[in-house]
Length: 343
Ligand SMILES: C[S@@+](CC[C@H](N)C(=O)[O-])C[C@H]1O[C@@H](n2cnc3c(N)ncnc32)[C@H](O)[C@@H]1O
Image 1 (cartoon, rainbow, N blue to C red):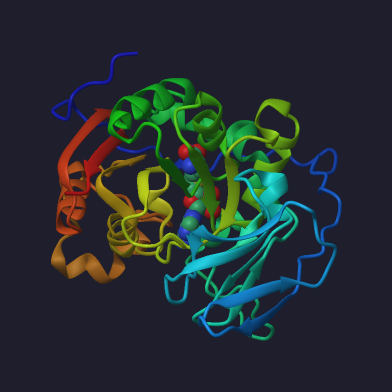
Image 2: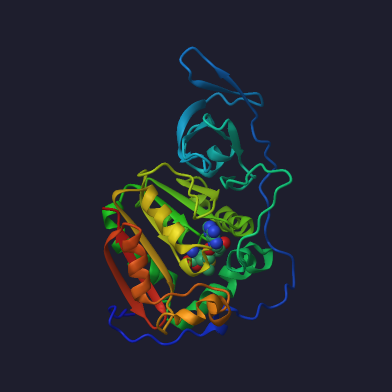
């Protein structure tokens, strides 16, 4: 399918297509959690070298190593120290524990994913995100996302996962062999494709929704070819990405910009983690109408509905204002794929 250039006409977004009627669940979710896993507990000892040594008190595996990680603390962005089997794959990562030696905070696997949100480990404090984020935390929405909900996007011009993946891979050519983070991966539709492609040294499937990550694990579990390859599942907020500055080669964000609580904080954060020359590729639904008149701006959410839709000019402005360069985009009806680079 040929995607028109940015000058192509944009049809107004069909909002109802974003909320397909979910058929009632005739059976329980097929989700089967992996065997229970007890995260290792840490005892930290400050040695003469000031290095923090992490000692795992639970079952120790012969190949256990302590190494500085790709992941960083979401509070202070210091690289985490990892204790556990080496390797960047689900079984190794989930038998590991992570610790920030600056904050003295530990992060452990929740059986399926590592929780690297700032609120990981809170006991009494709870926090709610806007409805457009909370919606996807629902088990029902997560279950149906790849089972009908996502297919509905084609009506608004999305060319479908295979074509979107092909288009993204072209933009990502400068990042080949590097680390790719699939931000707001949902149930991992594209993370699985990126991991299977063999193009990247590491793929991180990252989302805020625990249930999307569970679905993601479910799909991976049923595919032996990706269960033990270079893929990790991480829970994190796009506005607080758990990576050090300049450490990531590629960031993908499929159909996500309109769901983020603050797209500007998110794109600034994506710019922060990208290395020089690193590539950001995103897709979203375009808003056909021009900016909301000043007087109506306080009511913009009511007028637009739950999501944050932008015009293609606004998306370019957002990327460049956040410091990205070489912006380009492809548009088909309400679908836009855009790409920009870290200078
Ligand atoms: C429409 S889905 C897109 C899934 C997938 N990337 C795709 O292309 O189909 C939007 C995703 O954004 C995630 N999301 C919403 N707010 C987020 C946040 N603050 N941080 C990270 N992910 C978020 C949701 O959990 C959801 O999985």
